[in-house]
Length: 444
Image 1: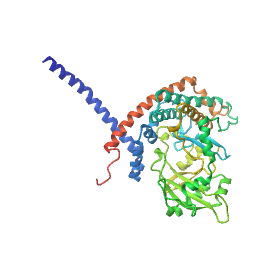
Image 2: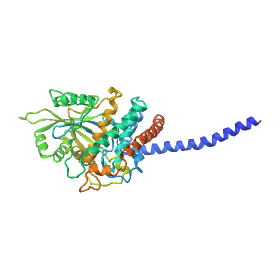
Image 3: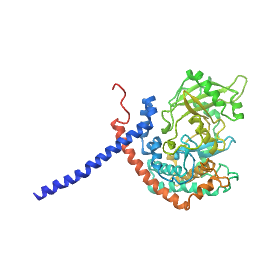
Image 4: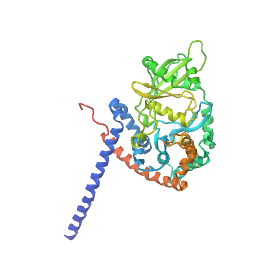
C-alpha cells in the first residue's frame, strides 16, 4: 500500500512538472511559427512554392536555419551592446559571406561580399553574428569543440588586431583592403584571378547566339527584355561616368531568371542580363545580375537611423561602395515591378571557398582572415555620430575598455547562442515535418 501510494505520488509530481513544461514548449512552437510566418509573409503571399523551397533549405541543418532566419538571430542581439557605437553593419556575417571581390581599381581582395542586410546597429552585433556563424558551421562540418573554439577565437582576434593597426586620426588615409593571406586563400585567389569574362560567358551563354542556355541554375526569359529596358537605363544613371560610358557601348541581348541563391535570399527576384557589344564595337559579353532587396533583418530590431533611401537596392549599393572603396566596377541599383534591386556584374572571380576541403589547421587561419576583412570593412563604415578627429577604428576600440576580455566573452556567448539556435532548429524541424509552418491555402 505504501509503495502504491508512493508510486502514485511520484506520478502526480511528474505530471505537475510535465504539464507546464509541455505547455511551455507548445507556446514556444507557436511563437516560432508566428515569427517565421511574419518574417516571410510577403514571400508566402507572393509565391507559396518558393516559400516551401526556402523552408526545405532551412531544414537541412542548424547552420542553414541560421542563414535563412536572420531576423531571429538579430532579435537575440536586440538588448545587447546597446551602449556601443553604431555603424552600418554588414548584418549577415558568416563563413559563406566572405570571398574574392574585384575593386574598381582592379585589385582582387578578400572581403565580405554580401551586404543585403546592411543597417545601423551596434558594431558588436556583426562580431556576434560572425562568431555564431563559425560555431554553427563548424558543427555542421563535424569539427570538434577545440577546432570550433580556435576558429571563433581566430575570427575575433583577426578583427581586433586589424582595428588596432588602423590609424587613429580621422584624416589619415586608410590602409589598402589587401591583406596578407594564409596559403590556402592564396591558392584560392590564384584560381579566381586566372578566370576571365570568357569563363562567365561559357557558364551561361550559347556561344553562337549570346543568349542564355537553360540549366538547373537559370531559366531563359527573353519575354522580359522589353520590361527590363527602362530599369536598365535607370541603372546606368547610378554608375560612375566611366562605367556608364563603357556599358553604353553594349546592348541587351537576353534575360534569364536565376534559380539559385543563398538561403536568406530564396524567393526574392533574381535576374541575369546578357549584354553584347553594339554593332561595330568589340568586347567580351557581360552578364549583369539584378538582385531584389528587401528590408534589412537588422532594421527589424534596431531603431531605424541614418540615411533615407528611395529603395533597398540603393541602401545596399551605398553600403557596398563605402566599405569596398567604391565597390566593383558595375555596381549600381534600379527598380523593377515596384521593388528595389542591386545590380552587379557576374565576375569571373566569383566563387565560394569549399570549407569541407580545409585541413583542421587551416580553419583558424581562414577565420582570422575573415575577422581581419570585417574589421577593414567596419573601419570604412559610416558611424551614426561621425567624429572630426578620431577614426572609426579608434572610436570602436575606445568604446571597449578591455578589448581582449570583451572578445573572450563574445566567444563564450557564441557557444550559448549556438546551443539556443540548435534548440530552435529542432523546434523548426518539428513544425516543418508536421506541415504546420505555412498557413493552409484558401479552400483546402
